[in-house]
Image (cartoon, rainbow over all chains, first blue to last red; front, top):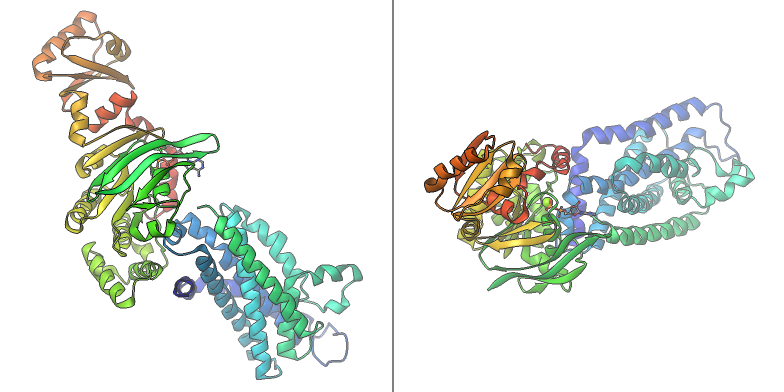
Length: 250
Length: 327
Ligand SMILES: Nc1ncnc2c1ncn2[C@@H]1O[C@H](COP(=O)(O)OP(=O)(O)O)[C@@H](O)[C@H]1O
Ligand SMILES: [Mg+2]
């Protein structure tokens, strides 16, 4: 456990020091939240009569987005460690690769949840009200699961990549579609029939719906189904990340 | 007592053999050098001995532990300074050390005391709270050496410890390495393609080229094998000179990039005669120099080429550029 903690501590220290990256990676979610939120709030009529407006609906999606991008990115940072040689220092130590991988994953997940929390605080500041304290805890549980799931996913990808060249490709063809299909920006009930299955195999969908349940008290998918689906997916990602990282060459 | 025992160690990448059945033994407390040009297989050898690469075949024992059977055992007993920098630049010197200490599960009290002592040893005490990205190449190297010693390894690997450093910093580092070896009795295995470094530091040297060890002995013995003196002649006719020159006191001649290196005995006595014979053969001579054999001559003698012909390698330069901070 102390090895996992050591790796986690390093991630956190690096995160706290990279002020520009913290601000930089908040840029896009904040832009989405403000532009889409304020821009579409009065235009979009939410289905059903839950009384929620589009802005409220959007916040959980943007929190999930923030967690998603930060965690994938933190996992992929292993490539930098590879290129700047630091990975060798960890790999030549008498510790297992599983410990290294778990430490890196938890570190990435933690920073991702912090980034998500910034969005949550921001939305409170602009006057959006949520249900209850338990609701916040539920939202954080789902944020944590998204963080772990996609940090592990980032590590799995990074283990297969030689350098950062493939990064843009992964962002455009994997991470953006995961975000776009997740129902972060629109209610999944209002999707065309043929798109629904794609949405349902996207693990982020369950994360978004879970956070939505926590913050708004309603969700399109039952929260326990969300928990089971995302939890299962997280477990699979950890195993995949651990296996691929174990085989990764330096 | 044997610190490292290597037998028929081989590494192939595809059908390219990077390290070809090398064998050697290193005694406890020795400074042992692997000297060879870029691409000779030095780093590959170190990577296998430090468990980062699986050998294709052969065996090796480090501190009596089999590198394939007990990787963790080997890892606990060795320290390593990689050829390329391996510090976290976003952390301070202290934090880099602390990270290492935690990875090796050194209890907090011991860890902090040792970090303090080692930073003092490498004269980085007053910079311990600075981020590594503000450090010069020499400071980084010193920090890496201190880090490699933190868990008190019995064997320390140094892969090209002074690559890309300026002469003054190199000298400084050499002194550290010698002090470490003498005061702590640590066995040191270092790789280098700098002749002077190998000559100055190593008790014994293995000359490695294209994955095989071509000679292994003390620097003095290696140089003795070349002959007692060396005359280097720069000439447009160097090829002819190398094949045609002969005398009882000449033990051999090798031609390389416009020069002939002639190995002989009592050069001072025979130099006049040698120059006269150049005249008789009507060779054009640009310059002539006499010197004691260096490891460069030893390398030339065994491989028919100079180590410098391969250096600075393109890969080396790219690597150094990538390392960024190391000047
Ligand atoms: N991972 C690898 N895959 C393929 N070839 C490699 C790999 N690592 C090293 N080599 C090759 O093996 C040879 C020896 O490399 P190396 O051990 O780094 O030499 P040195 O450290 O003596 O400069 C070189 O020709 C190098 O290109
Ligand atoms: Mg090398």
